[in-house]
Length: 68
Image 1 (cartoon, rainbow, N blue to C red):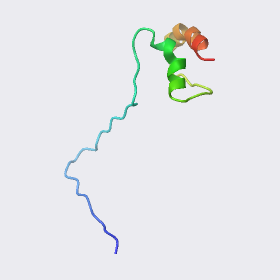
Image 2: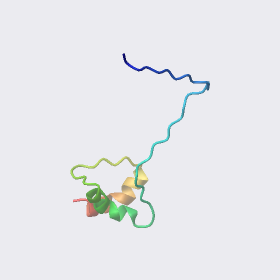
Image 3: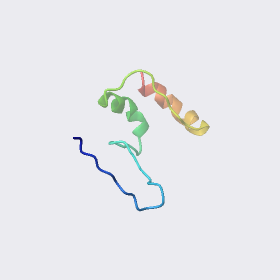
Image 4: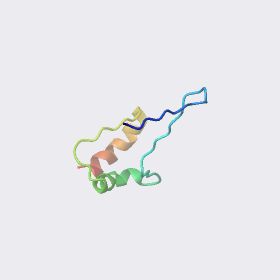
């Protein structure tokens, strides 16, 4: 016979869940470290950046330099 259990929820609002990466890097020069961070994670291949126009304009030269 299988064991079953039930959970009764007494709150009325839905739960809020916050999830974050195990590692978060920021600060001066962080963009220059992208290649090393991706290697450290064992990632290779294509990268998708989601950025606004100003970030694209300012950071694209760095991305092209540090990511082969």
